[in-house]
Image 1 (cartoon, rainbow, N blue to C red):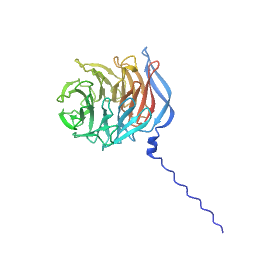
Image 2: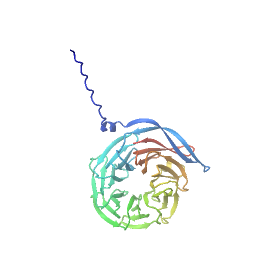
Image 3: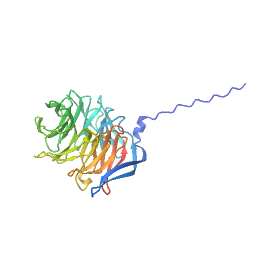
Image 4: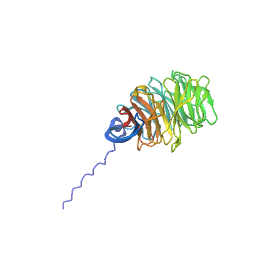
Length: 367
């Protein structure tokens, strides 16, 4: 009696290696439909739906991206809940290098001007210094805060580092030695962000106590406190000439949710406000003058929208909704036409600013 032949058992499907995916760069190209609004010269707001070729790159992170900053015209540095700091070429869609050392979420990054070095702050209460072309281990380690570090800013000459925390304190460090040289604390001053004013010894700071402070790094003392706002101040950014700064407000349902332009010179008055978001404004940037005929600024919000504003009049020139992104956490200028926007659910978005009948803001890639 002949017995039936047994068939060979098929091999189980192999899982794609994460390393393989990371090396591939562009994963896929597809069409994306998005809605944007722009303000016509006659003041009428028009809404348009556009269809763009959209690139899905290999992701920089495997979890929420907390912060993104431009290292140069090709590379950005980002950090997030996966505890890593990533250098990414956003023009080619490739991870350049991953840096691991933090034990908890990376909250802030700050790049050294015209350099390949940068700093990262974390919920593990430390700050680390990295070199793009150096070891994957931190070049310098700064430990001195009692709670999560929520602000980090490097001086224009890169010799000093200022850090801030929810422990109400600011620390000033010698970058070369890693030693703390000054310490200051203000009651209830839960730091949300720090920014060093270009070509000046001053550091801007926003706080959960609804204030914006200007610190003099020479002795680390408060040089000026701007009028208290109605809501928590989440972020601040100084203009390249050091003459102005923007701060952002928390809020909900359109209450609060604004950005404010301040004069940093002698008067230090409020110049303009940008209102139109419906949830907390998490980030703001001054855009390059080459981008538009008038000076413009951009904001990103937890309402999933990025807006471009006329800096001097407060008029909203363009709005882009990044549907499905979750709250937008951080915004950075990539080059004269590009913005990088970090999000809670969809990684980092590459946005392009085009000149149409108005300023047209569109998403061209995500990673």
